[in-house]
Image (tube, rainbow, N blue to C red; front, side):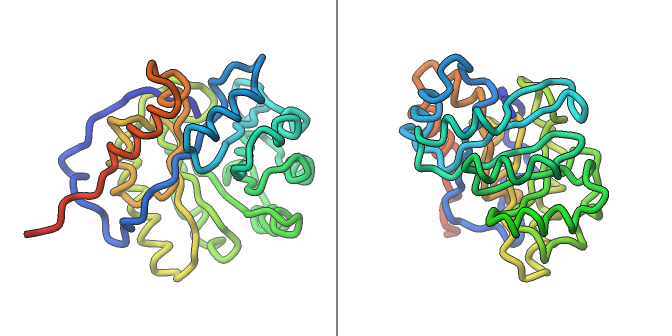
Length: 247
């Protein structure tokens, strides 16, 4: 998702949540707000800037109001980066397009819990295709939607905005949801990554990371930075500097 600066670090989020990892978080570069006439170059510059992944926000004008990329566009840009690609399928019926996005070069496929009546079957198909399986949940969707599929998941995406539009404000209440998901994953013993998507900037990244996120999707905070993409990624990492050791 495209993002913009939102809130500052809230008082309740100044210390890492239980289960938080001090490993350096991964910045996932979203191309949703990129220059569509030069997408290959945009992907290349995001890679050079130091993002750890490239995210493709796929919209169908049904589940969300906008329409974006198909698998042919993703495939055409694959040669511009050696970073992993992930397809975030914000679509009403993802099942018919899973194989196409894997064939286009996406190592991770993320579907929405709200659009998959047979979620276990969808996740199994993604893995059978050789990709990692991810599930996204909207801000108002309870974690019960994914509680019983952790064995079939590689990644869970907590939406920190309502999907479909760029430039939305980060929702701080989602930090509690991230922390709950971190605890749930910890109790399960599964190696499920937690990603946050929406409104991530230097003002919000630290709180999201401390809440338990390991991957943070950044769009306009990187693409629209006046100092360029590399400076933006560096600033995001500096904003998430670990707390000093206790005396």
